[in-house]
Amino acid sequence: MDGSNHSRVSEFLLLGLSESPEHQRILFWMFLSMYLVTVVGNLLIILAISFDSHLHTPMYFFLANLSFTDLFFVTNTIPKMLVNLQSQNKAISYGGCLTQLYFLVSLVALDNLILAMMAYDRYVAICRPLHYTSAMSPRVCISLLTLCWALSVLYGLIHTLLMTNVTFCGSRKIHYIFCEMYVLLRLACSNTQINHTVLIATGSFIFLTPFGFMVMSYVWIVRAILRIPSASSKYKAFSTCASHLAVVSLFYGTLCMVYLKPLDTYSMKDSVATVMYAVVTPMMNPFIYSLRNKDIHGALGRFFIGKSFRG
Image (tube, rainbow, N blue to C red; front, side, top):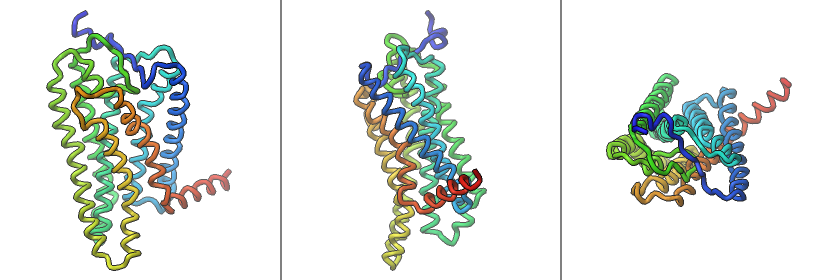
């Protein structure tokens, strides 16, 4: 079979975390539970923000979009994994694998960029409060979100198109829960130097630049908070950032566990870290943002009370 036809007819085998039937049954119910919790949690955040006018602010606008991204992210990967855990056929088509890869790469980048926009929102609110209305107007927020979407779509498109030029031969077994960039590159039998180079260059821009921006934003935020004379006012200002800091720490912590290592050392033990950022992080975000958030609690209460009265 020649290389030109190779990609059209090939498929991969998503073997997941374990090939043991007993383990697969446990993993099925575990991931199904986590998926349902993630879907319900993020949908509640979106509904609360959408239907409550008190939450129509820049911070909650970006939070709703973060929840939508997380919802889309887990739906891109977990349903297929659940099917594989219940089926003897672990195959995923070449096109299906690249589609999964595209959305995976794009949505991780989008998550990262939205978190940077949320850091900017907190910076303006605390360090430039008099300019907040104009700096974070609806038009500006929509423009920032559009930029985030455009960059993430372009980022995913670049890497997916580059992957179409990679030739795969030999083993097609993927000991992973989804089609992941590093895993696919390790299966390649053609030269992937350009993939590595572009991955480093674009990854540095799309991840390190927003991360540096977030670090600088919080440096200025901390300096501004320390200048506040009242201890209660300091606590109130910091509490508006605590949830975002927790989510950023969880997001970057799990990504670093997976990607801050040479490609040739990538192994099955990294599957646990992958589960952390692919499943656990989207599941935890709604809890982190709503756990001590009285605005979200009130909005959900009004939403369900309103529904019960109309029912």
